[in-house]
Image (tube, rainbow, N blue to C red; front, top):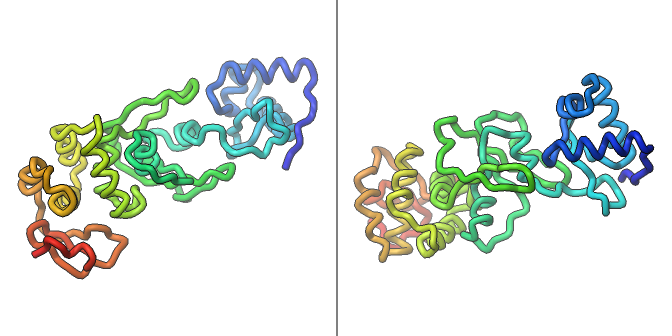
Length: 269
């Protein structure tokens, strides 16, 4: 736990200028360019300011300013989304984090879901007490996104339809099939509801399990939404999928080519 210590007049001026010209995070290269010093000198400055408690190190060569009202430098991330954009771009905030943002779930999740084209070794890094859940996607899957301003930084977030499609494609992104189903139902009742866009996203994603799960969930939980069913039936692929790959599935619903847990048996063949 690093206590804050004083800065000289020149150091304070330099640090103020650096914070003014950066957006939430500060890298060695940005510091070198802004302060017109060598990369080596910039790295030493940032390390010194971190030691004095005015910056907090996120990873090697990357820092965040410590809020002026803080008495210590070991503080939680002020906005984890900005760090996600900096560390894992190109990509977007998705899954339950996006669902929370759009008001499609009342659950509170402590970790941040990040979808990225990168392939990091650590899929669950903890940075300044914030846990990130990292999922790799193909570049062609970077669609259905909305840029959201977080301070001075634009962070891509999956729009409501894409958020739900991602969660149906991988129920783990929603915390499991039950909370994913709740998010789907909330989407259908929300101002964001758009049948054509929803089906278009599902087709573009190219995961045949989406239509199997979607058809089953609609028929099982929201039969009044039968307008979705013809599109789901027309897009069924060969083979059987599981309603939730993380759960045992004892019953095959042949209509939707879907294995479901026994407790979801109602309405199955």
